[in-house]
Image (cartoon, rainbow, N blue to C red):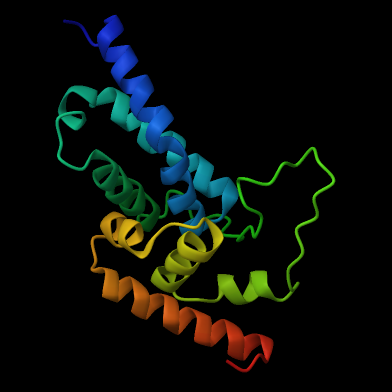
Length: 162
């Protein structure tokens, strides 16, 4: 069966439909919206090229996250790491206004990478601690620790008492 057979294309299409948004959110939490999209496209292109091997993996999403993270670490996608504080679920065509403290974006950008990822995925994208831990390859309690540290720093930066 060739790589472009209908069952392979359908299987890859189903994978992309099920997991693209989560991968994009994870990469956006790491590098911002523009670079997050670029890395997502890169890893999904890579996944297509290696689909026969990747589809049989126990955790293909985790594997692709590591591929994207490693590509970013090599500097392929570090040009612009601006953090977006607008949810993917906001209807940009409606009159809905997303209100947040203007200083928050720069404070989030200033967090260490792991804390920034955790706080954006958990509080920005509503992922569970378990989901974030699975993606990052750490325990739920480690995710909680990063979230607590990040929130403490954000509160201090905003002058909010906890």
